[in-house]
Image 1: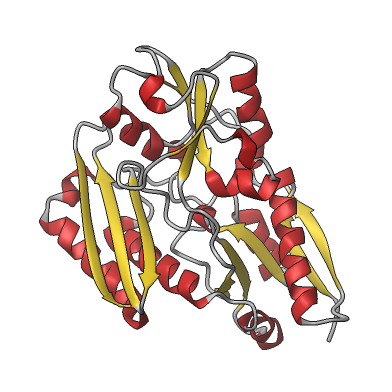
Image 2: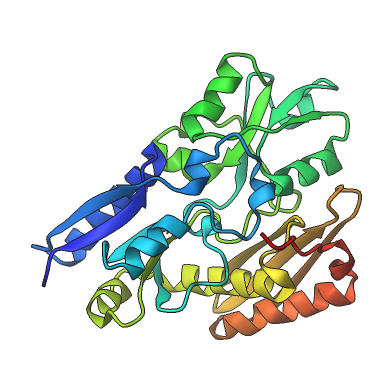
Length: 306
């Protein structure tokens, strides 16, 4: 087989994820030749702008997708939560890796969330995390922060904020689990769609590369994230409202939990749907319909055209 080129963002975490994937590929296909190509995305360049301003725009993936379409790379590795539900013509999501812990976690210098004093400062660049946090602790102050995982943790050490909320999977991949103060419960902090999983995007017509990844695709993860993405897309995947979902598979039953909140966080809707794990996409659509009947659409504002 030809040498394959793997595209990735240039952050420390993204490179670690791509190197991990490369190791898995070489375990499955001894003798495989591959190399990484690092790309700086718009999301990396615009690190001072809060993420909700870019909702649905794929700011961490567009440059990698262009490199794929231009045949500069053979595949792109993404944190799946960064990949929009609408994928450009000519590209496909070929596989997902086994999902790590999908939960959000607190890293703090003030103990667990319940121990925080009123007016303590919590850092996050995620609207989804902010509204769910304030639903539990409206007495806390949210500080918008961006930057790579190192930068966000440094803000805690430097005393700029009392704590930050980040993805457990990011710290696990970095080998920093010992820095986690508290794992936040999913029933109060529904994760971002796809959180904790890696997605491999390829050119649709490149059957050789697509076949390569069928060998390392994790089926339960695929079922869960496809249900989550179907849910998000059915509600309007490019919207700026806080929308979240998490799927789990047990005994061939997929349980999908969803969350939709108003932009100001004053109203939060939660619902679940279960079904045969083989019908994962339909489960996502059914949950979206259920939450629409609960009134979710009144909280979902479409983004203005760019």
